[in-house]
Length: 493
Image (cartoon, rainbow, N blue to C red; front, top):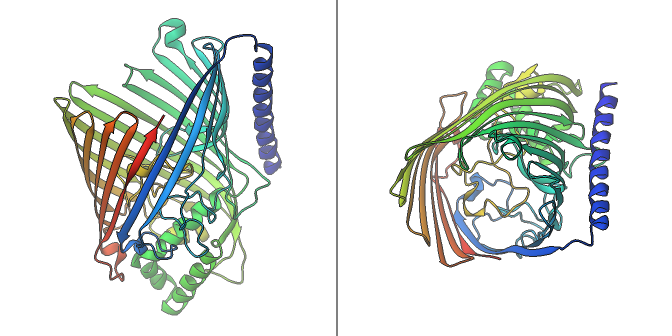
């Protein structure tokens, strides 16, 4: 009965999307006599990447240290009729390189390739219609970039219907309201015939153009096993450290612990022990940006609750199938303080925390509650946190980060030095120390350097250097460091 209600709700959302699109198209036809304007846009990017010891962070990639070049092309245009109607189309070639199409290798920083696990890989990156009957109200429908609640929760290109209302234009009150219904594309490994939906409601108080505080509530209805690969990722991340293994030994003994770990590794190679999932997970939180003179403060706090059902292979007890129900509870906190110096530089400190579970594999497969913070398509732009973000952060439409995907959680203490002495040049240094939230182990120390030079308008030459020194969390690995270098050129129009 509950599944039928979810299906009805999803069907209703999809029907609403179709109605909005049809209505918008009819509006275009009936208003065709009015003046139209076309504005082309696009991005062409060339990247070269190389590194050392990248196997630690990319265990499934063949020859990860081998340098290679890739090209990204994203042409697009905007079609407008006055201020009330616009249509945006942006095409995406994905990552074009010999490495991408090699039968035995994965791309390190682009998921748009033949080995991609997502259904959202397509030639169309954005294709949506925006309708504004007045200055205060905007309605959009189609494939578009959606940020739900916080970028640490959801930031991806997905089909969606959004509605926004700005009271400043209507009543001179600095409040905005936003509603979103997002069709979350399923993973290729799971059932593509069903659809999961993320609902998001936000209200923002706008102090100024760059200052605001936003309260949000998001609810994710997983009906097509979208949660399953996230849970498998949490289970797999536990295999990289001694913490989970020692817990298994103390509870089950050494012989059985080895069998359990071998089963988990075998199942992960085939997609993971969790084969299917359904869930209802909610996040409530606040995020804000505020200036106090030259001091800029960014704060985000999120609380997660929910429940779900999973099925698959029970590596802890072969006699019983994995068919169980569990609840979720998690939290995330993110703080960033930055001081701007004479419009030439900025220095800052940041702190990032996401909750973890002492035994994530057992919590998912045997216990009643998982305390690891979960997010759907998170994106962390404050620090790379294991080489995510950086100069490549806007290229991959389905790019993932580790935020919300490590079962033991994250605690990150970092600093930032940003220098922009002239308009054409910007240099940023970001050192960060990263711990699991639930243990005394250390993920390691990471430092990232990015440099962007713009010799002329619309052309930039980016460079990035990432260095990671593994801590005792990765004991058993003989790798002393992990290093990555990326550089290239971007042309926008």
